[in-house]
Amino acid sequence: MIPWSQTLVSIPASAASFTSNSATDMIPNGDYIFPAAFFAIGTKFRMHASGVCTSSSTPGTFTFGIALGSSVINQAFGAITLVASAATQKWWADFDVECRALGASTSTTFVATGLFLTSTALVAAGVTCLPIGTGITAGTGVSNVATQTLSLQGAFSLTTGTMVVEQYEVVLLQA
Image (cartoon, rainbow, N blue to C red; front, side, top):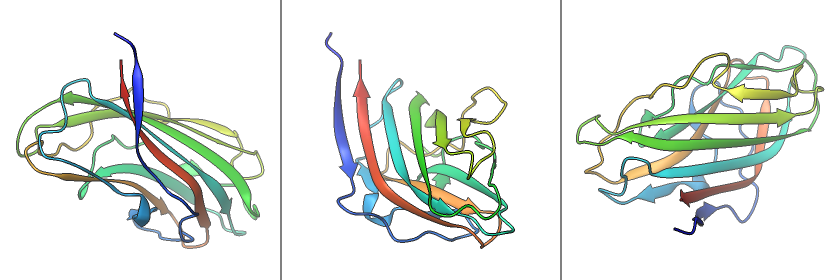
């Protein structure tokens, strides 16, 4: 079988500035609706997002989440600790998501891993594997018998950061 991929959604322009300190859709114009019964065990997709981030003198942390509907389907990725007073620093993130179980109610589950890259002016380490320091396990499950809206969520621990997603794409992967 020849591997292939298909872009499901991308954004034509930068998303609005994101400053929320509660888990919120970072790219409302980048949501994708999966039809009912879309997923099979082994279905994989990749989310790519990149942009700029600014932190204040009290920077706090930032967390990512991948949601289907109102359920965050990845296990906790962990908090990325920002450096104080970083101005307009580029960042890049990729997330690989795979369906591991199927069913109704909350029986359809996924695992996800990610990579967050930026300069050491924004995050001391520069490169962060997600989830931080743990193996992967399934997150909250969803129903495969209903349509599911995919979104990339984010949250600052303090409302002193600003993030802008400049590029975003979701690609369905098939082997």
